[in-house]
Image (tube, rainbow, N blue to C red; front, side, top):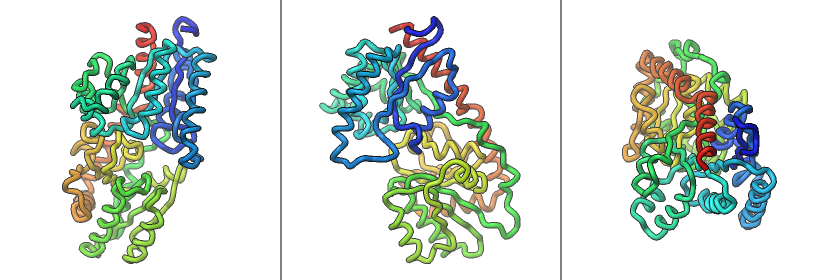
Amino acid sequence: MNQSHNSCRILITGPAPEFHGGVARYINLLIETINPAQVDFCRLVIGKRVLTSPGWNRPFEYFLEIIQFISTIIWKKPDLVHLNPSLSYSSLPLNLILLLISKLLGKPVLIMFHGWEDGIANAMVLNSPFGWLLKKLLLRADHYLVLAEKFKKQLICAGVPEKTISITSMMIETSHFGWFLDAKKLQPGDALLILFLSRLEREKGIWVLIDTIEYWRDNHPDLPLHLTIAGDGSQKIELENYVNKKRLHPLIQFAGYVRGHEKMELLQNSHVFVFPSSHNEGFPNAILEALAVGLPVIYTPIGACAEILDDENGIRIGLNNLSGEVLAKAILDLYRDENRRLTLAANNRNLVLLRFGAKSVSDQIAILYQKLIKHK
């Protein structure tokens, strides 16, 4: 180590601090909450930035990022490199290059997988040519962090030593999220307030949710309901046009991209969080934030959701069974059973306090850093 005897310098890579994705928030919290007497971070922006450049320019950006990465290792002399990719086709190529460079320069490497594509994991397990090559490259890392037991088992089946894999959690600063259970009780005539908070892309399930509101209007016109859609994305204009065409605008509000106080206010004032995604997720940050304010969740078993959440947290809907009618029935169940809804809310708040507190998670990461550096 190049710091004091009980501290270490970590080169951590990922999106820009101001980027609104879950990986950037994770790194921000890790740097903010970890004990600075134990860990000195050197952060390098890799991949997503707030202002994206044209696609044709991306190879030049890759080249510059690689040069910056090499320069940072040479001049900052980190004790360990912490990479934060997803197991995805878009994220892996650059991170594999950084992994190889790190090992060539004699640095131990920790990889945390934030997103997870089963197809890539299965290719490794089945030893397809692509999977074999990927496995050979990934096996050069010293340790791996994953968000679910399922992911760990897939890596083990692919030949990654079990002792090099740890299950970790996403994290959230719980002090930023108050306890608003009483405010979520419905009074006679109140509308049930539904919240969707994510990118407006088809794979996030937003179109199914629009179908849900249309089904609700046609089948439960006497039960007041309102959906707020928070986020931006490629489908936004098409969604707005469809909502106007179907005359659903009295039941649906587009809030656009929200952050900070505006996002907190939406979360706190909602009754149910719906996230019918079919995307290859790790554990979506939007769900974590909804749990933190005590929102019951209606969700699909994507990524780590199937392991972390169960009937004590909300209503799970299988991807093969996902439709507007099925989602509407799940919402109706929570509408009619307020005791259950409030119990789920309390369960979710407690789950976050016990498992996802930023200080607790960052302390575990600091211990792992020290362990890996001592054994390099």
